[in-house]
Structure formats: structure tokens, C-alpha cells
Amino acid sequence: MRRLFCLLLLISALSANAQRRDTLSRVKTGYICQFTYNFNVPGADLAERYYSNSAVGAGVYYKTGGNWFFGVEGSYWFGGKLKEAGIFNQVVDSAGYAIDNNGSFIPIDAQQRGYNLNVKIGKIFPIGKRNRNSGIMVSAGAGYMEHFLRLTNNSLGVAALQGDFRYGYDRLTSGLMFNEFIGYQNLDKKNRLNFFIGIEFAQGYTYSRRKIDYDLMQGNTAQRFDSYTGIRFGWLLPIYTGVATQGNGYKFK
Image (cartoon, one colour):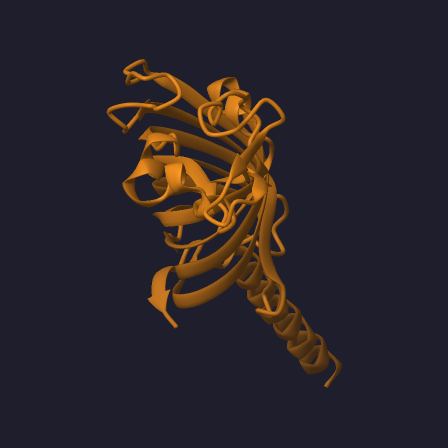
């Protein structure tokens, strides 16, 4: 009886240990939806025109059993006041005011707007064995960047900025971009707290898309280098399709 008890105890311990190893080595696969926020500090040519900005976005990527992921994402930018001086010199007086259609003196208020669309690929490096879906997150991507000046409603009351005239001042700029990210991703085993946070670096090789800038009375054909560094946070919504386990291959949920 004693030997039977010891044997049952040993079988129970081995079974629990096997289940524990299987749980620790399990990597979930599936689609991860993300909803993101960035606080970006511009660099290079972008820093000469704009102050810091924020961006909100969304995307989706597929995570494999090897903790690789690939997908698409996009963000919409919105910033504060314009940094570059002289753009509206032809519209305002020496004190910096323009006259609107009602004869009132108003300052010209222009703010940054823009967006980017990217494809990306990356990998998760688990820190421990208890949750192999979480860890250091590294990715790289490429896509399209566009930014421009948005005039406020008050500024659009100035005749020289109405209709198509405003396009001579909006500094529409776009082109190819690359981005890199390093941070931490957490995918909760109980699916309660799923997020990532880290630092993003972006580089844009862009051109002006307007034939003429009215303040310069000529077009600008030079290539720009628009970069930024941002703190990036995202809330994740996983839609798992399967589980990959060490030694057991792949299986559907």
C-alpha cells in the first residue's frame, strides 16, 4: 500500500511537471490589433518647421509560433503652433496681424497635421519562461509619410488664404519613410492587460508637393530629411488562432 501511494505520488508529480513545462513553453499565434498613441519630438528638417506633436493610430499584425510578427499600421499627427518663421509675411503686417473679411485684425494660426502608413516586421524576445508571449519587442518598418500646415477657421477668414490660395502656404510634404522600435510588450496569459510601450525612431525622405510657395515665389525641389523620436504606447487586442509548443509542434485552439 505504501509503495502504491509512493508510485501514485510520483506519477502525479511527473504529470504536474510535464504540464508545467508545456505551459511555460507555449507560444500563442494569431492576429493582434493595436490602438496607439505617440508623443514625438522632431529632428533634422522637421524640427525647423514644427514643435513636438502627438499621434494616434491603429494597426494589426500577425504573431507566429516563433514570436515573429508582421503587419500594417497607421497614425494621424496633430501638433501645436508653427515654428518656421516667414511663411505668412505676405499676408500679415509688421506686427504679425492680417485683416479678415470683417475688417478685423487677427493673427495667423497654423498647426501641424499629417499621417503615416507603414508595413512592419519584428520579433518578441521573452524575458522569462512563464510568459513566452511577452518580452522585449523589436521591429522595423517602411512606408509613407505626409505632413502639412492646417490653418484654423479664423485664419481662413483672410481673403488671401481662402480657396486654392491656401495651398500656396500649407507646405504639403510627403515621401518614403522608415521606422524602428524597441520596447516591451505584455500579452497577459489571462488576457486582461495587453499593451506595449517603447521608443520609436523615424526617418522620412520627403519632397514638397506644391509647385510654388507664395512666400518664396518659387517651388522647392530639394529633398528633405524629416525625422522624429517618439515615446510610443499601444493597447493590444489579441485574437488568437492557435498555440505552438516546444516538442509538440503546432495545434489549433
